[in-house]
Length: 417
Image (cartoon, rainbow, N blue to C red; front, side, top):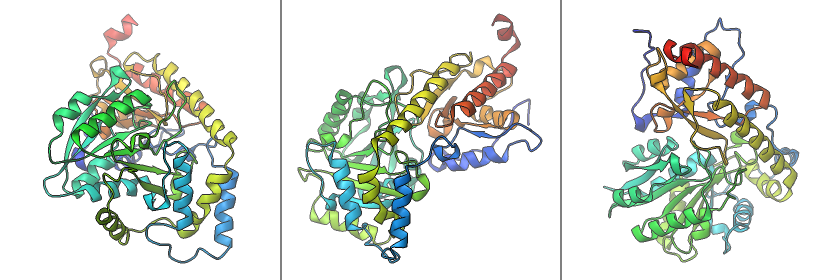
């Protein structure tokens, strides 16, 4: 500690990971603090008992395992029946049908991100990535020697893409345009009209869209979820997704990389062969997990999905209402989807906090509450709060956050409040 501020070594933007920062925050917990830990930093709802997968998912995995048919290697691109089931599932929301050949099974959505960037990488290339965004994109791009060009999301416009910024950043070496919808870390959901503008911009620039839809269908605001693949006839869309969030099984590591390109502007025999060869060196999900997917998709009752959405709606409302009561924090938009929200931190109103990183380390130490500093997702002096928690734990955590802020608010401001 120096001059009242805690100094913490942070990595460069291209090497920051959410898990790495959260690990450091966990190490900073005060062992003598009797308050129970409440983790609101990671997008893993399984920490809380109100979020659990459907019974049929567990049954399907057990059945596949006990059948003794899925103990060997799967094809490197995934089991045919798994690819077919995901193609059919995604096609329900599209104006055209995907085939199983358009689908490649990955070890979670993280591996799908790596596949997308690896397939687009070439000497001198650059990729457009949102800020704020998901730091795995920066990490993967750095490993692939892709130049990273950040475009801004506009908090005053519901975190929409700054399309003027995209056009200014793109050039003849731009190979991809990443969008995340529903939004992580912002909790936004793009309208059909805005997604169409994104597609038109990508078409004009002649670059494929990488559509991260890992939070697909987890929406509870005014805008319904519209997959970017709807515009696949206009511009090639590489869709990334997984079972992790909608089925609440992040530890099962079952994801997909899908080529939405009915006009065959992107996919050609050479590209497909390159993708298949790349998958030959990857390790996909366990074969028995893959084998369970068709039954999981076909037999999951809509009641399960509605229950998850209702809980997320309830907890997002709690988050929105309680944050408004904390003077040094501002939430520009009520969450519309996903499991997280971005909060602006007014550092100037705090007596002895230097920045968002210092704020989160002190909060962990003093209150045993873990939230993510905005620096981790590209916005300094912002915070990302994950509201995928049981309501009582969330209320308790936000109550502690309020007490923490009050304790550190400048004395003059306290007297005015």
